[in-house]
Image (cartoon, rainbow, N blue to C red; front, side, top):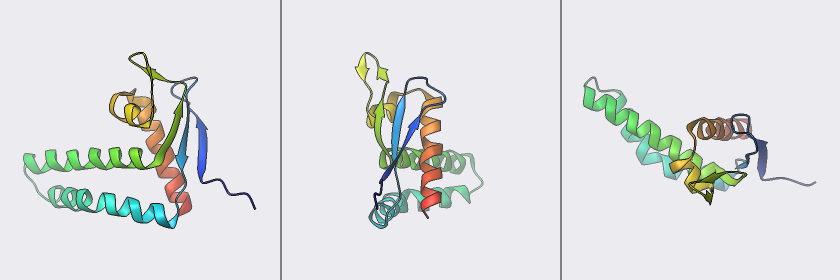
Length: 116
């Protein structure tokens, strides 16, 4: 049996861009859970609050979770340069086009849920 620990995609939002996301494994599941534990608890706490500060903090936690998913799951990126330099997983998360980042996030969550 030949097992691929990643899934390759051609971007639908950014022509010419290809990316790969990691499949779930026991080790990667533990790694992700550890990364999300603190932020998830903080987000849930603030989401239960009713004040504007709680809403803002819950929103920040939600976006931090998205960033962690991207940094955890995006393992390769090809065909994109940002500010004249080849993009890599870290730069696309921080500086890349939002439609592409959103597409990658959907792919990571799809692969993660399929492997659960």
